[in-house]
Length: 209
Ligand code: ZN
Image: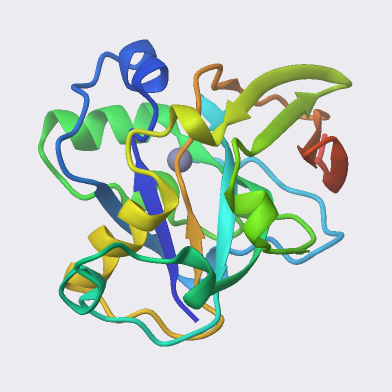
């Protein structure tokens, strides 16, 4: 199973970190060991002093896909290739990432470490959901810290599938983190994170004290 992630997919988030708005999708990956097992607490790794939460919509791949732009010049139907959706967290060691970015190095140490990916319970993907906009929120200690709206994505879900499959083959079971809206911020020991998809709670994760 592969975990693909999209970076800088919302203008306001790119701005809050001082990044340029990308003209093609920023793609990075996490190994499957980065998935936090359901129901387990998260532990802040010792190599960071600035761990950020990034709440994101997450898609599940249901069919093999490659070069979708060539295959569907008329447009890609997300439902042909994905069957479920939820909310997750792309935990990011921001201090580590900033150092790597300065040197032009890959981001894995900052984003692909063990348990850096929180995944909510899946909702079946439907045409109605995809007709959007899709709303989701992340709460920290009971307070909403991020509000997501899929209509504000720079690369919509079909464009994300196009961007990934230009370079990589998607397989059933692969998952795609679609980028975070504005409002990312620090994570402290003892924090409680809850993700909501269209108002329904899909995960609850405690950060170990
Ligand atoms: Zn992210």
